Image (cartoon, rainbow, N blue to C red; front, top):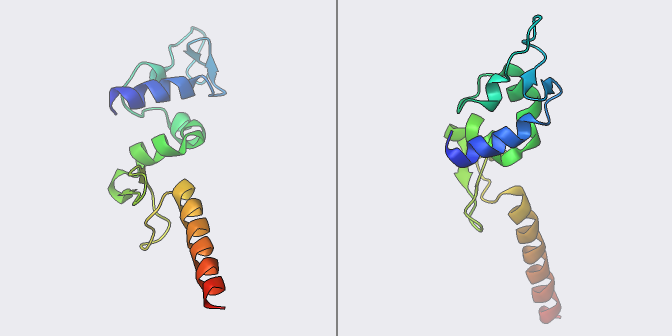
Length: 112
């Protein structure tokens, strides 16, 4: 995990239901315990990985699916493709679909 990813994960830790003022409620056995996910550069908390990390799709893809990521043909950001033919991230795919529809309709009207 690089520094920017660490900072993003650190912000997400505050969304965890087990985070209480810097302490982890799951690890609390009578004395307060610092949340391990907030002080490390790796994904060590299983609850954070399963429940909190999917809230940020880009960070989740960057950390969990590194081997399966592809760059978007339009914006260059990395995404996890849903099929082997995917070329665009979800935001750019919608824009590209609209552009192709617009061009197809224009060609059809020009042929009339």
